[in-house]
Each structure stands twice: as C-alpha cells, then as structure tokens.
Length: 172
Image (tube, rainbow, N blue to C red):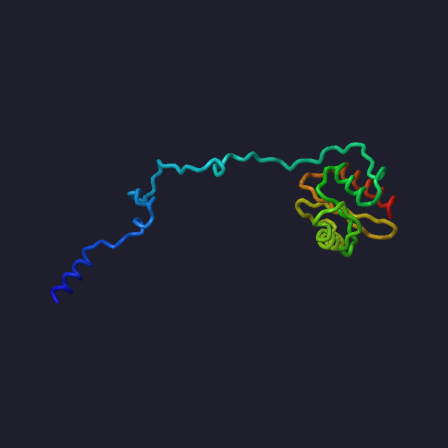
C-alpha cells in the first residue's frame, strides 16, 4: 500500500509533458501574448505591395491587314482577324449554340453552346471577358463571340463586325 501511495504522489507531482515540448520552435517562445512591436517577417514573394488600380486596357488600333487575302480557309481568316484586333479568341456560333466557325481554341464549343443561346434569348447580357454581337448571313442568325479582357471601342467593334461579314461572304 505504501508503494502505491508513493507512485500516486509521484504521478501527481511530475509535470505532464506539454505541447510546447513536442514542437522544438515553440520551446523558444516564452509566451504567446499579442506583441504589437513584433512584426512578422515574410518571404519576398508573400510581402504585400500596394496595388495600383488599373483601368481595363483598350484594344489597340488595328493595322491594315486583310483578313481574306492569302488565307486558304475560313479558320485562317478568323485567326488573322484575332491577330489584327489583338483578340484572345473569336467564334461564330449559330443561335441554337453550335460552332459555325472559329479561330481555334479549347473554348469554342463551350462558347458557342453557352453564348449562342444566351444571345438569342437576351442580346444585352454581359459576361466579363466576352463580347457578343449578332450577324445575319444568308438568312441565318449567327452570333459573334469575342474573347478578350480589353475594352472594345465602338468603332473597333464595327470594324470587327465588318471584317467578319467579309470573311463569311468569302468562305460561305
């Protein structure tokens, strides 16, 4: 019985291991109170720098490049159009959501399905990074789908529409 009492006393007087002993870096810290004078040191990649508020860029003025001359097919003409106007991607879709023609890219089918029907039901709908316009070619309602994060001035939008009609008249 005396041996049991000694063991119980030892157990009560021996401090239990703490979480701070398990983590080597925490053993150096004496207290975890808020210390306003101490600032965290961040690696250069994580430092926050004041961001300058930038307005969205505007498409540059296009050159005099012909979108038809020298192009062997409609896809090449549409690629020339995207280069001429600094667009990311350009797709012509039917009003029921099918790709009619495209400059290429992974999003052409998704864009046609999503924005072809959207434009047919709500021509004024806006989506960031996408500009839509309607076309009528040989009694078919088509939708021009422009992918760019830049603003398109009204006169440049008219030029894109005119070049698109020229491409359709040449190839279709």
